[in-house]
Image (cartoon, rainbow, N blue to C red; front, side, top):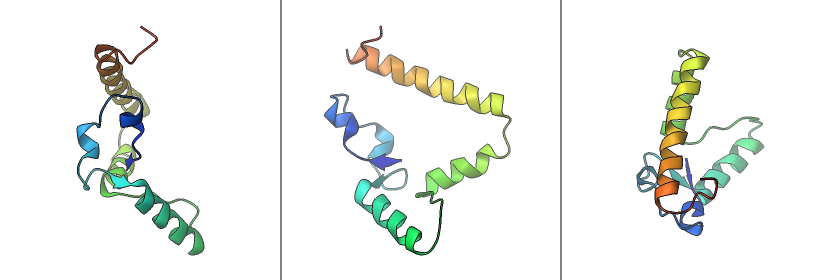
Length: 90
């Protein structure tokens, strides 16, 4: 996950997971890593411990379970946005 300031820019604050370096990294660090790996010939770069852990775990889960999990997370995000008055769809 990358701290870009997007959430603050749209007025919903910063989610808790972006407030420590274990779960997220700055956009500058992610870009720096991507450029470094590009010059090393890497085509795909997955920055961060959490991102790599999630990538590893998904190999062992059925796709329908991953879909359910993502849906649950997105529904929580939608609820958060609707309670802050930021979701224009509802």
